[in-house]
Length: 260
Ligand SMILES: C[S@@+](CC[C@H](N)C(=O)[O-])C[C@H]1O[C@@H](n2cnc3c(N)ncnc32)[C@H](O)[C@@H]1O
Image 1 (cartoon, rainbow, N blue to C red):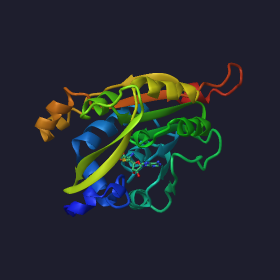
Image 2: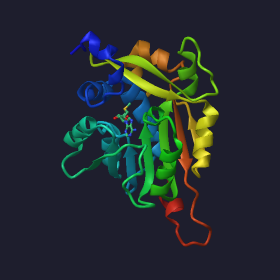
Image 3: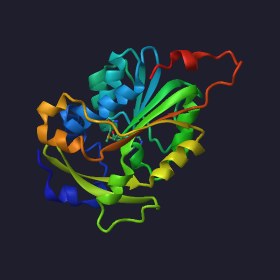
């Protein structure tokens, strides 16, 4: 259903995931960007997740949580939007561990509660990554991984006119159409080194920096979009690791459980 013009023009309604939850979730389900590019890339980076306890931070309507669960992971989902979480609950069932939580706040979990944290397309909503990454690091066990996808900083820089100061952290708004509905999103853009510095400052070690290709299955389904997505910069993906347990500590879970 198209949005009324004043809705998308109202600057107070940016990032209103509660308001456009259904439209966003329906679009995300089968589009090339999410279903044939971002999600397969996250799953490939995660590798074999059977038996792993995974926190899906900014889980939205839960498509990644569902895919991880299908692969044998024990998944907990958090999101700031109750509307998105309601859709996740519809998908994942009443017994799913889903909680409303803002990633700017302390996380409602014990130290070392998870083997992995996945954060799909959510960190770029945060101005300051420091407290959030520190919390993600805290809830990961030694040797655990944070796997994250974000807007590519080079794209965020290049699409703005006039161009911002590349080296500053700045916000910008953009219009998107989800399932025919026009919405406004506001992102925080930062230089690439600020991302890697933030991971390091939180105690993570950079393991993988990835600019993946879309799923080949999308070539026939979306020929034009596939050509564009496979030749232009898309999202940026990170795998960063919490330090492994000290040698001789007896905790071999990190090296034995990790296959991704
Ligand atoms: C682009 S959607 C991605 C959803 C999901 N990760 C996926 O890939 O399908 C961004 C999600 O981040 C959530 N979000 C934005 N800011 C957040 C914050 N500060 N804390 C928690 N969730 C947030 C939104 O509510 C939304 O569900």
